[in-house]
Image (cartoon, rainbow, N blue to C red):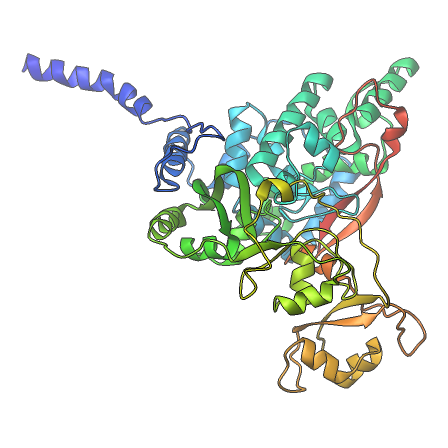
Length: 523
């Protein structure tokens, strides 16, 4: 009997050690290490899985919303600004629903990272006011991703931006960068509302506002500072979101539950693979794949290293690993092509049997048929293998993200993207845009003249062409913009901000604080 009691006691004391032994730090793999197992994805996915299992053991909630509510720790702000934003969200339940639906993929990861740093969980809700949790959100000032980093600040915080990838859109990398920046701001100002104000308006703006109040003998807390109007609204807007998450029924809203477990995991993939193929191997849609991996800017995913990391839904990771290991065909259907002297974009599209729109979007060019191209392009690897060669990832990574538009040889064309509405006909559209019905049918591969409401038509229009009223057609949209536009129908509202989301230092001129920035809102 005593032996059994002793054995039970030893087992009880050992249990915590056994639980702790289940926790495994995520594997840190060197970028130049090519000696990993050929079973892509297993090591990384398993280590992340065990990490999340340990973290889940720390909480009893089944709902992620409960976990978020329990972590609220910022002082509440009760102001007219807050009430205004509460009413705005409450009157737009469809918008709120879409935003929360998008957040399902990312929120668990952000909450975990916020908790690791001991930060209040209100911070995890910040992408709701920055981007509506749209990872493809892009402002007119080029702020990008769910955390809306402008290019310079992204570089300051280690977010690489090259021809192949824009890490400002990388959900995990951008989250780390944003939290690093917010921690830095909190250390500077000693209060989260001031840190958030600085994240929005720039630390120089907040520092000067504090100095001004100190000189005048006024309080230096957030609500007493003289800040740009947008920044005055910034923290109350987050407070409004917090209030809605805390008591949604009070605002006539319903929160769909988000499970308190990881939505995605990380897997290893070869250093060159088409996005479409990666999605197929995982058994998910291309839309789902790009939502988790929005940082890749080309249809082929390429890294200079021996492997690359991809995010996949937790249930799809094993599908990807197993299918990849059994896949024997080429992993990419794209090659590089250096145009001949004077060769035009339209001719290249015809040569490689690719639409002008896809070719221009793939290579970040305006869809101008007469554009003379002077740099290496990505083209389909097909019947013209003698004209192309395998992609040189290192060389093409040197191509700037925003390539200067090369001079067109003669007439300029604008690519039109038109969404068919009730009452639209081919003849009406042709008359409106100054093109022929036949052209619209040919460029959209239409077999009949019947149009479907909601259908998107794409075709070319001479830039000098005007509508019957003599004005430039308001329905014209540059195709490049339509590719960047989120599926949720995002729009961009301009606002004036002082060096928003931009790190400042004593060596920078104060004029940077007047930099204009545009944020992203979602219809």
